[in-house]
Length: 484
Image (cartoon, rainbow, N blue to C red):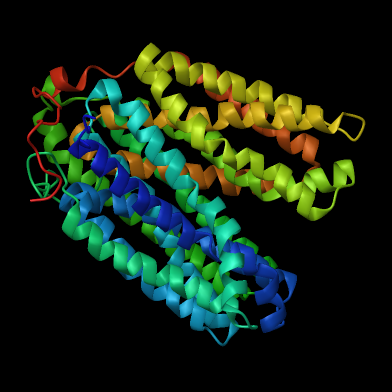
């Protein structure tokens, strides 16, 4: 029998996907124990709500910041550092004895959700354009499964460890896992097929590189909703009586100052090159980033929002127990294992713009059908519609990141950070809508948003072939080892 040697790029894909998988296990390790924690600390519903908000609040700015760090220092160093550093708030959460310790450690732990951005850049270094979509899709789909794995495995682990403190041991063990794997990743992964480390291509600090004054305005405009959504977080914490009005106002003023400062740095960073004139071969259209961010807003954003409300929706609509409803609703997340890689593969095979357009159109139809679901429907039909909608949602996510690494290679991390952050912006936006309307109207809002994004695809230009644009061929030499 002839044994096939695992190629270096496949090994890197496995190493990076598992890093992403573990980061999602840690990010969502609180969810299975939320009721236990509520009883243990005698928390109100508002205090639990604040914990859930804190779990995602810093993910939005962190994805942007991590994108900058990846382009500057390379994914190997940044991913290993992120995993090691985030083990600290994870273990602190497990050891917490007061509500404020829970709240602060959870806030910082939300940063680990930015790990997704790092792998996007790393995989783009190891796979050629014709296989980029499937590779990024496997990374995103199987890594995302970490949230479902946490929900399934951590309660069992807590039971095996026994006692009222079993939840602490289970969460603490996830912290130890990312600590150990962060060290393993540093010594086993390589940034590129040619070098252990990626030379910092982005040397200057200041912001994302754009190539026209119009794009500079677009960059500033795209940052505004990210700061705005953080203002929504502050408003929610104020409405839950977690923050005083003075603290909420002070927080909003800080956000305003940060937005003005970020805009000024972006202008200062890009002005010298724009005044001099950017060579044609270095130019790219920021419009592409905006369109892909909008697509991720409605795909990943709706996924996070819908997964949060589907169990209750099925329970109330079909008079099911929460356990049954939870299992059925879990089907929405499970399709990630297949749908996201398939969205990437189809993009490689038939064209990125075409597949993303089809996925967004299917998403719009899927959510429209969900908006019509009622207790008079056969349960099997409602489940089928949910699965169909989920396929287009997660296939669309795969199609988005089949295209992101091809826009501007040397700033892939920053572009992925912006696009990824918009997924969290979308989740917060849709959950805010959900708090104000009925479920059917909630699904209809997402459907209309998907239709708008589908129409916007007319403006998207298929990325040029990377090898031609950047004057080099992206391939993995057959004699390259994974680590050197």
